Image 1 (cartoon, rainbow, N blue to C red):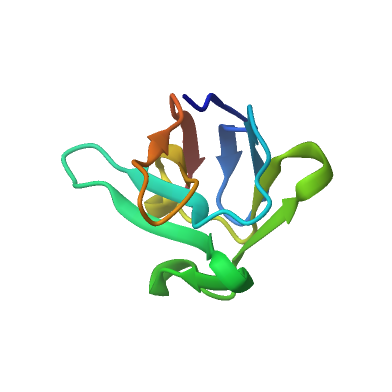
Image 2: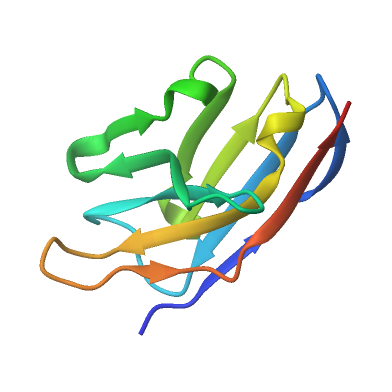
Length: 117
């Protein structure tokens, strides 16, 4: 079992910045995937950004150029730096972690991000 602890959400004005953190209860070296999804009210959960094996990074089109995902292996933590926030970024952001390609994925409890116009 893997525990994921998220932090950093909150209320921000449009154009502002927030940084989300996701700390895992085990090493994130050599993981299959770790990243962030979000779910807005009435919408499906969607990918925001993910680091895959080999340090391949994928971003959803709406956040490209504004959000940056990074990792600190010593702290078993993945970050999501969100700049130039827009009201449409408002959602609950979930950390996702999959240790290997054969294992189940794990989800954090979610952290609310609200961007006011």
